Length: 176
Image (cartoon, rainbow, N blue to C red; front, side):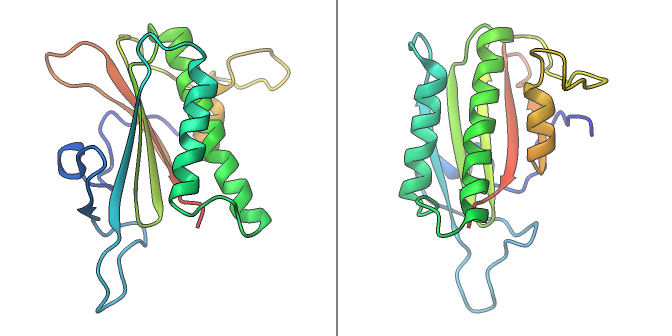
């Protein structure tokens, strides 16, 4: 799978959801509300990381608190627990990549609507992350984007015209 340069649109655009404000979810990937029931509200959490120390553990703790607030942790069974751990691992990988290759992360955003959880890490870097090909499990380092590719429904890089930096995003099935 290769990365996509634009998001698939499974969740509302950033401007529609705001920072923590609820916005209606768009149907897609099986997350439409049953007839007669309102669509699930989108939820957004943001964590500024510019100049922070201990960025990776801080980002994981932030994501864990969001999953707790959204009722996904503590998990009711092993499958839900594994899905939540996948979310935390992908957060770690995206923030670590921004630290190592993107000039340091600016912000972590978590957005959810229905059955999709979208993670976004923005950084000032110009590079484009790619899974190491061919992937060699015995080789140290360089496994981050391979892990993201394997665990996520989709992932990609978004750039705003005329602005420096990028946002690396990944979408996972919500641990419901």
